[in-house]
Amino acid sequence: DLSCHHTIDPQPNPDKFPMHAHYMYEIFYFIEGKGSYYVEGNSYKLQQNDILIMRQGETHKLQIDGSKPYERSVVHFSPSIFKDYPEILRPFNDRPLGRLNQFRESAFSTGHYISTFKLISNAFEANQPKFHLIAHLYSLVSEIYLAFDKQANNAGQYADNHVIVDIVDYINTHLFDNISLDTLSERFYLSKSQINRLFKKSTGSTVWEYILIKRLMKARDLIQQGSPALKASSKCGFRDYSSFYRAYKARFGCSPKSTKNNQSIAFNDG
Image (cartoon, rainbow, N blue to C red; front, side, top):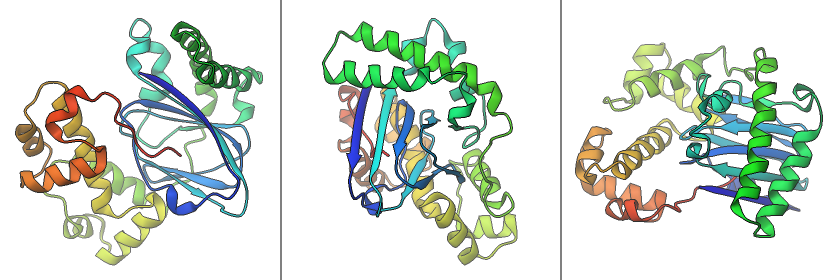
């Protein structure tokens, strides 16, 4: 329920960073490179020492300049770690999808969050006792909590006059309905080609890829909570179980029925 990695790519390949989501919460620390981060249709231009946070199921994609070295540290953790102090997770939970994800260095009162991130990374690499990691994580999340109020006016750059943000919001509200490009075209008075082009530009995926990831994430949650795989697939908008099975196994690397016994499913890391 807690992991950390520090990675340096001397020549990053942009194609290796597709849109993805996680079943745990993520804190992303940008150390070096040039690029932008797309979260639920919102674009955040990256600067050195930026922090980005994503909650469970919040889709994100890195657009990186392959000509410059790319260095980052990433922490993934289960919210259950903070079950006794849920208020501390307000920066992750108390905001709309894709909004207020980014924290500039200026949002923090000190540079303590940078040294704390290094402590977490070093402790994880040295295989230190878990309570050391959790203590450092509490410190880091506390820093983010204090910076959260300063970020009220930094909701990212909305794409194309909020159109994509509105489309993303609509999809999430009607995620398990029979959504199609025709539906979205009629709703937002745009052609299907316009929607696909704008959506791909702002999220890094097609409309259907986005819907598929969201539905699979929810189905996985239901299965882990005890729901039969067939029932979960139907509830999450899949009309054909065999198609659901193939998509699920391709995304998570295991069958739906084996999910309950596999707590280490991972996603692509930015």
